Amino acid sequence: MSWKHKHLLGLADLSREDLELVLETAKSFKEVSSRDIKKVPALRGKTVVTLFFEASTRTRISFELAAKRLSADTLNIAVNVSSTSKGETLLDTARNIEAMNVDAMVVRHSSSGAVFLLAEGLNCSVVNAGDGCREHPTQALLDMFTLQEKFGRIEGLKIGIVGDILHSRVARSNIWGLTKLGAKVTVCGPATLMPRGIEALGVDVCYDLKKVLKQSDAVIALRLQKERQQDKFLPSLREYSRLFGIDQAKLNEGSDHLIVMHPGPTNRGVELSADVADGKQSVILDQVTNGVAVRMAVLYLVLGTKVSEGG
Ligand code: CP
Image 1 (cartoon, protein in one colour):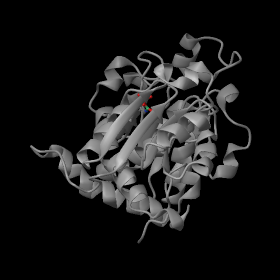
Image 2 (cartoon, protein in one colour):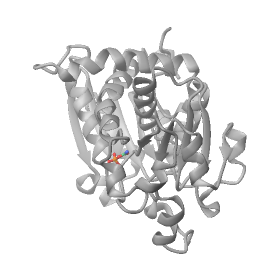
Image 3 (cartoon, protein in one colour):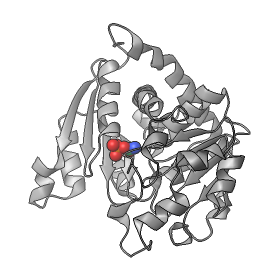
Image 4 (cartoon, protein in one colour):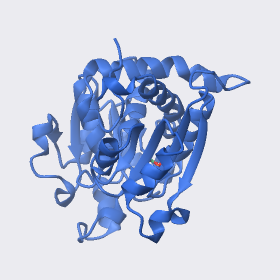
């Protein structure tokens, strides 16, 4: 298997073999983070910049840690102190950063597709750290890595994705990735937050959370994307939580081996009750740990690809 992509913009663009290669590479990098000296020289001399136009805890920090553990130089650009806040365009800001001989730019932006504009306009590698409602590929990759770690496989697993499917880039990336690796995905949430025609992506739709919990091996609860909801999609948070929030009582009626995942940040008491978020079926912190290994794999693969190989 060989990697041919200069950028990682979404899982829609990757083949099953590509996904398997990222997961396999991440497996070999995971051990590095448990060493006393958490560093390998794989990307020595490379420079990785994180450029985030939206808030982030997990993604930005784990990309930075991933780059540092591969011995790359790293730089975080805080957008509120960069010149985009003075009216400079996204592409001009990125071109000016690239002019300082940057090798990869990890970008989060509120506009779906902003990463394509950068990938077309820059020579360095662009890695999508979440663009609008479109994709969050490394989140889905770390979710898949965690599933593979817990179950030893992804093929044939039954995965429920619950919540605000309409605004969720995490849901979209997971749907692309999980279905390519042979999992059976069911999406569940309020009808107002369910994209019309989502079945065309190869998923089932179910509005009954209890049924989804009973049939699933793992459930991915999604954060309510309040910042992306321009209309009133829900009567109230209490109503949402009653119907689609996961508490211990609902979990007790689910399958006996069910694991609970959440990309974070969690609205406790809305998507998950506190006891479920911290309970023994929760793998939320394993997901965060695995995020570093997966992002090491992604940076290693995209930076090992020559510019002329495209993708
Ligand atoms: N899952 C995720 O993207 O978290 P952050 O917003 O904290 O990066």
